[in-house]
Each structure stands twice: as structure tokens, then as C-alpha cells.
Length: 72
Figure 1 (cartoon, rainbow, N blue to C red):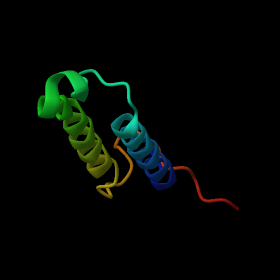
Figure 2: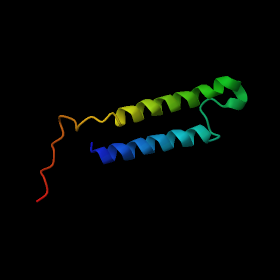
Figure 3: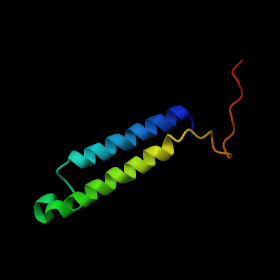
Figure 4: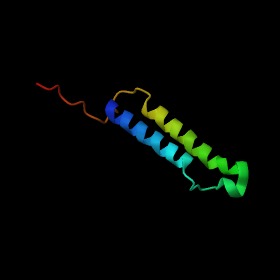
């Protein structure tokens, strides 16, 4: 995956996590379960953080990916 695609993927993951966090639709609703209802929001934010970290580690392309030839 190219660095540009990694950045775009990280932004999409972050936006998805933010939208889930502020949306009123939850797997575990806060109104019914109180503070326990925040557990799914925390899990989504934690998972998104780990995913973004892995995307932006700065690794080179995977060994299976061929590097394109230089443009002439």
C-alpha cells in the first residue's frame, strides 16, 4: 500500500470512529446501561487508534508488492 493510500485509509478509519462515537445509535445504549454503555464507544475508539497506528507505522511496501518502475 502506498503512503498516500495509508493516510487516506487512516483518515477514513478516524472519521468512522468519530461518527460512531457521536451517533445516537449504539450497540450498548448509554441510556439503558449508564456508564457501561460507554464501553462499546471506548472499544471502537481503541480499535481505531490501533488500526491508525498500524497504518501509519511508516513501513515500506509489503514484500509481495512490486515497486513500480521510475517514470521516464
